[in-house]
Amino acid sequence: DFRRGQKKKYIESKRTTMKYTTLSLISVLGLPIMTSAGGCTLLTETIFNTIAPSAAAPYTYNGFCTAISAWNAANPTNQIFEEGTEMQQKHEIAAFLGNTLHESGEFQAAREYMQCGDNIVVGGQVLCKPCASANFDWTSKTCSISLVTGGSYTDPYCNSALTPSTDPDGCACGPVAEDGSNSGYVPASELFFGRGAIQTSWNYNYIDVSLALTGSADTFCTDPDLIATNESYAWGAAIYFWMSHVKNGKTSHDSVLTDASFGGTVDNINGGLECPASAGYFTDAVSYRLNHYCTAATAMSVDSLLSLDECSGLSTIMSSCVSGLCSACNAWVGVTPAPTNAPTNGPTNAPTNAPTNAPTSPVPTQKPTTAAPTTPLPTHKPTTAAPTTPPTSKPTLDPASNFVVGYYPDWEVDNICKNDGAPPPYMANNQVGWMLSSLEECCTKYFSWKLNACMGITATPLGMYYPNWQQQVQGNICLFDEDVMAPEYMMLNPALYMHSTKESCCTKFYNWDYNTCMGIVTTPAPPSNKWYVNFDTSRCVKACLV
Image (cartoon, rainbow, N blue to C red):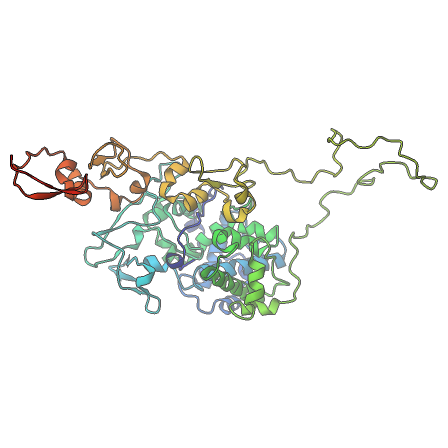
């Protein structure tokens, strides 16, 4: 959520494998708001203001309606707030607003606070002062000590190995130079922190959203801050995530229309931290999310709340927070939840002319006797006969599907994420806590320090020097990464570890043995009959006169 920099120490990757539409959002901004059904026909501006009385730009009602129209015009077979019955459309609006109210700080946080809560506008350009939570004043939204050091800032949401030409791709990114006239500030247009109603973050997500909403990778790669300043993009990026991000085989849109589940939407958005929620902040966060949802559900006049079951622990938290942080849910206590599976328009299978299961033996004409049966007893091994239960109407998902078994961290053998269907028993027995739906999510969560290796991405040398701490070759020296590849954690944080020259690297990391690092051969000083420290033996030695 918008406080991610303060409370969240990992980012759940929000990517999708769906194809992108090529119809530009900009090209349809002039279209009238859809009024045939759902959308802003059901959510009037009066209802919106009731649900979100504190909403501020870019989270305007008109921007919301424009973004809906734009998405539905570009995606005629994947409509938001326009599919299903009118009651299902109300349910989806309530679930969407309940989640986005929480993610965006009640529609007041256009940008993630820790990265750009303290910002200034100079010459039309937004400058951000990145901050640690301990140095951020939540009342004034100011930062006392900037994270910008040495004239630059390393964007924590930049995977510099991914570019528009790699596969997978990402917006080009790297260390961001400090603004020359404003100490501690860097341009917002070069950072990929959370923005918008579902806080789009990371350079690889920005390129996806840019392609989906504008048809071009350049739009948000060139200026990611458009999602914080353009009201249609602020809502549109959230709609894209809602309609496209797949977890456990379904999107948030699917969870509402197919499973009648609010819990499924929470799991999709932030299940790694909230389903179940750990103690403290995340328990409160779930309570606030529920309160926003119940507020929206009441305003939308739905017939009941959606199911909470698909987010582990959600029902338990609701039962304990109705008298406190989620008091808006009091209105729904005792109301029967919506069914887990939404009803269909007709029977799943057309009725047959005969019973589903034919009788296994003729109807007896006489009272059964106690004699032994004439048919042999069943064997202990299964036969090849037809199954005793009829097949389901839908095939079981392919075991190789990412969403059947999921990815898990293999810490014992290969130190990578796997989806081979054979996680350790403690992970298999707690899939919500350990299993993730995509390789990227798993690698980001469990192996962020070696993300490229985990994802099978071959790192590209940066043409820089780094300290030989792992003793890839012997000696206190700096190595050139085109000769010997640097450890991935250094390549992912070049501002901390990588240097453009050998001299600067040796000065930074081996100033106590600079000559050795630089390969400078020196003539030993003549004996002085004085004492000096021998670090190799941890002893003081005397340079005796001969």
